[in-house]
Image 1 (cartoon, rainbow, N blue to C red):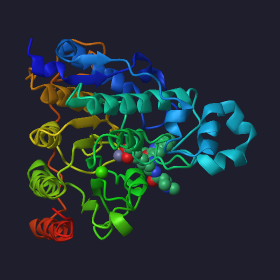
Image 2 (cartoon, rainbow, N blue to C red; image 1 turned 45 degrees about the horizontal axis):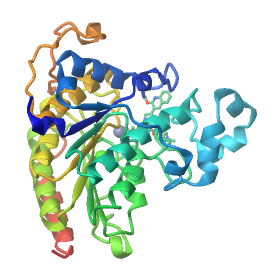
Image 3 (cartoon, helix red, strand yellow; image 1 turned 90 degrees about the vertical axis):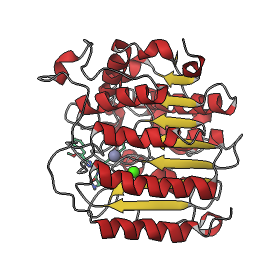
Length: 372
Ligand code: TV1
Ligand code: CA
Ligand code: ZN
């Protein structure tokens, strides 16, 4: 067995797939169990350290969140929420963030993996960490937002900042990483970079002109994109922007949110990336040789989410996998082809070369202000 692969840590809790936002809700934690089943059927679990994360405590969560909000989350249940509707309104946006059964435990698993994974990087025990249950980038200090209750990413980055002077946060979910950007908007120790669908799309923030304030000015990078972006055009902007970010900022670690709602055929997102195009971003970031933490996030066509996170696990391990899916617990989800691949479609790319070049050059101008 190759020693290098042992340095990949994969955080997984068997219970995570049992939490349910509600039968008609598009966020399905079950997709994490589906990804895990593909990962084990390829035998990838034998090539990395598989770790069940310790659950995050109230003390862990209140390093970012308010005491009021976490106390509420700990106590809330569907029954209690019905009795106290006004209490609810303060913390949970209706429909998007229901007070489902076990919501606090679900958050403690997601955040537990991101905190423990960051500590593993800090102690030099791993140079790649994976937590597909993390990536809940919209959660705010004192309230839930967009299917996210506890911001595991902010908690993980706060942990990394104990040992690393500078950390890059990178977000390829189709939505803007607003909660993480906001948490670090005034600091020059975290450079937050989000690629997202922009224009009449949730959460509505992430204009290219939003670059941070005070000490944090020019340490927020936003890449607003139109519908239908394909692998080649995405790779063009992604590589230009990220090469520029890595060279100007020189981070000690990269925290990457790998939301798969940027894939072609997603229920919510309108990008046209194939699995290979999405994974090319992960591979590109791995090539810098800086400790890399990959978390999940969005992704609403669950068979494609599972395929892509399983494939990205193989990419991070440097272990190639066969294009046909091995038999696994949820095999019937992947018919009629039973292939690993998620292909792109023939949808129109609304992003022009000129717009994308303009985006790259605007960002180049912003990053020129970052001291070398
Ligand atoms: C219940 C049942 C909730 C069906 C929510 C789509 C649903 C959406 C549902 C939905 C849906 C959103 C808004 C409305 C703000 C609200 C994990 C007042 C078919 C990281 C979060 C998107 C994305 C929130 C999360 C968005 C992530 N879109 N069906 N809700 N307005 N909310 O627009 O970035 O992927 O859609
Ligand atoms: Ca994003
Ligand atoms: Zn999303």
